[in-house]
Length: 405
Image 1 (tube, rainbow, N blue to C red):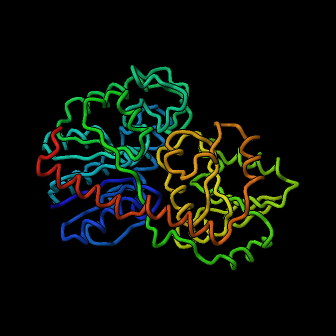
Image 2 (tube, rainbow, N blue to C red; image 1 turned 30 degrees about the horizontal axis):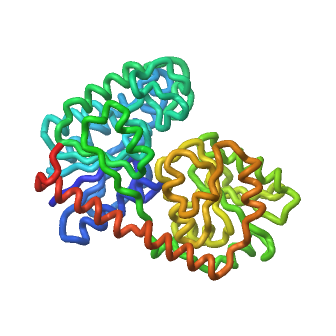
């Protein structure tokens, strides 16, 4: 069995880690996997191919912002990808993210359809069935027809022209006659959305994301506490995400909560900011992006609470990672967050920072017993092996025609 995995990243970001874990798992079972990715550092593992041309990616992003057309550029990069698919000759292609300015969607999907290559597509956001948006937020035009986009300047952003009507119809046509396609969502929330979209006539399944619980497990973090000059009696609240201070990830809400609790013995950590150095301000500590998972596990272990204030999330792996490190999740009940939280009573209505601040204030600091209990439960629910085996079985069943599209 030969499986080709396509994503924007490899070994980096949530989807890049998912793809690399699938790659390792498939190969460990004696089958052959390959990764094609568009952006990031050059990785020299066997059958791992960066097809994206960095200069073309920048041009793609610029043209998208100027013209309003999404996923319509990267001509040469896409040719490199299709050429690699032909050379590798996979039995099945598994597509992950297709936005982020690295691939031309139309020729890629048309090629897979023309060659009748069995294809699995995992939806990590709503981009597949909207005119441009990764998350449509309060807008539900995607159920019928995207036009006059209310989030034109949000990611995937454009400055002037609204071509969401055109892009919506193009995607609708591309998926309409894609016969050898199975769609996977990580959450019930996204499954229900996809079934209301033009994708509803395809087979759609749920496979929850998993994490490496050998890495994300309670670890000693006293040295990190001392480095950050956090006293042992301070309660630590961690907010962690790529671009944590963006509106979508809700860092501004965490700052407001920190202001509300400024008189309390609580320190707030923000990981994933644009800061290159550790920046301290009042009861806040701002830290840049961290790619080392072992270091991330140390931050999770240091924290007494993990807070997530995103406007929308699908099935955020940060919540899984935090709980696997024995740290409970608090935040807003939006999107698929509730499906990742083992104690949903810690979640409040989106934007209700008063209630969330009260929950954080009342929460106890972690102790050894609570850490062991939560991390054990998280291991049982979220371990990577279950997730990887479900995908592997899906590949086998699809190729043996046990699943009919």
